[in-house]
Image (cartoon, rainbow, N blue to C red; front, side):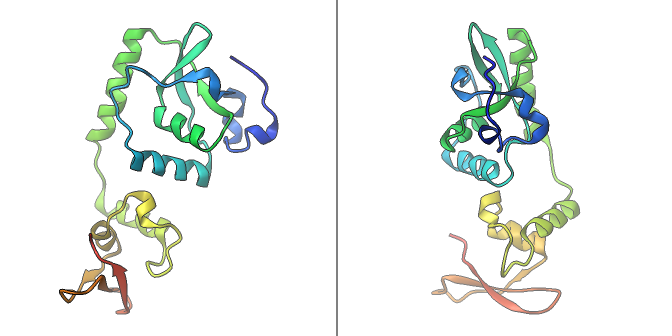
Length: 183
C-alpha cells in the first residue's frame, strides 16, 4: 500500500503526518459505517481541508491489499472530492471486535460532549472576528444567526414584517448593522 509521493502530492498534509501518506485509491469507505454524512457536513469537511489541510490521519483496517477506513470516512470522501491523490492514514491493527467498539464509542462520545458557553463565545469571536467584515463565514462553521448573536452578545431589534434583513445592535459600541434574516 506504500508508494512514495512527491512533495507536491502531500503539501495538503501537515508535515508530521506526511510519512503516513497512502494513495487514496488504496482505501475504501467502511461498508458497515453506521454514521451518515449528509452533503452539508461533507461540504464543511471539504472547506476545512481546503483551509487548513489534513491535521488528523484517517484510521484504516487492512483487508487483503486494500484498506477499509474505520475512522475518517467523511474526510476520505472530501479529500477525493478535492482531487487529492494521497491522504495520511494509519492502521493500528485492531481486531474486528475492537474496531466495532471503537467506532461506536468514538461517534457516541462526541455526541455526549457539551460546550462551555463563555469559552465557546470567545472561540466564535476569535474565529469570526468583526461581524460586519467576518474573517470566516459563520455558515461555513454551521453557526446559525441566533448562535452568532448569542456568542457575540448582540441584541436583536424586531424587524418589520416585510424586512428581509435583521437589524442588530452591538452592545459594545452601539453600532447597528443588518444581517440576513433567519429563514
